[in-house]
Image (cartoon, each protein chain N blue to C red):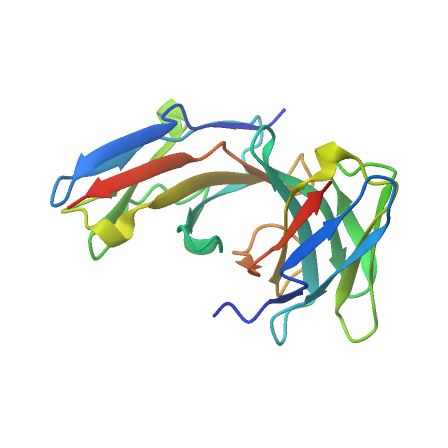
Length: 114
Length: 115
């Protein structure tokens, strides 16, 4: 058990819809990272928050947004969903503000767009 | 630009064989970090090891060993006497200064260990 909690585990929705994925980091970790894992793109870094502030941005679409709340949990919002957004979305956490430390991953949210 | 290449898409071995997973990275930075993660069939990603660019010392942890060679920009991972439980996808990853220490993952190598 990594200590990182992601909900829900599975999500099935339709094109054009909006969903919110939730992540609670490991106790004591201030950074939260979001990744998308798909068969054709592999594991892609989306965005990082550190103590409530955006710290780094990767290949995140404009239709996607994230935030980290004062209690350090984070949410990833995906809107105007397309079939290609079907993927496994991982959240990870680490103590510090840079990606120099090992990241501890949650079990992921599997998003299926019908 | 930073890049991680895991040229081996899939490897299949028989239990007790040794197997080496290759990882080649690209970065112009002198300060960077390399990682290996394991993703078993259950799906979660598990951290295995971190190495920084200033420490070329090889590491051994039980049946696992890692060979870091800056001269060839490689960070290879060897499993000795493989077991069925080692079956997983293994990812090599790079975090470098220029990239803002964003973590870039290789495509992964799927390891099948047959009994």
